[in-house]
Image 1 (cartoon, rainbow, N blue to C red):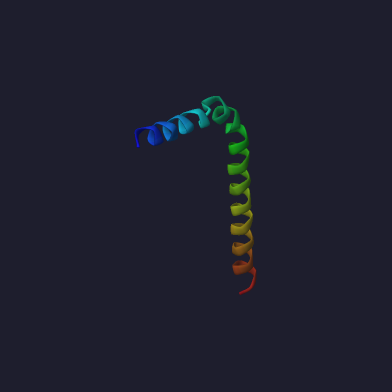
Image 2: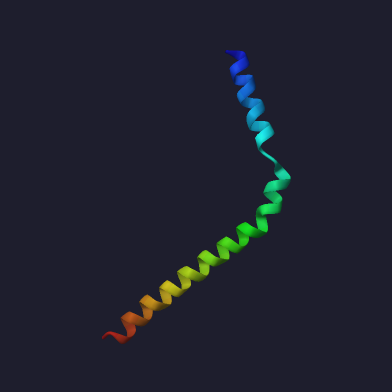
Length: 54
């Protein structure tokens, strides 16, 4: 049973690469900015429809 958990622990430790995470941060930032822009466009469209449909 110990070997099983030992092997699982090693797999997790060897799988996580901190530098790969740091290198992916710019891409994550671009994605978050894209989500923010899409949400802003949806908000503006809904606001505009409410304003001009009265």
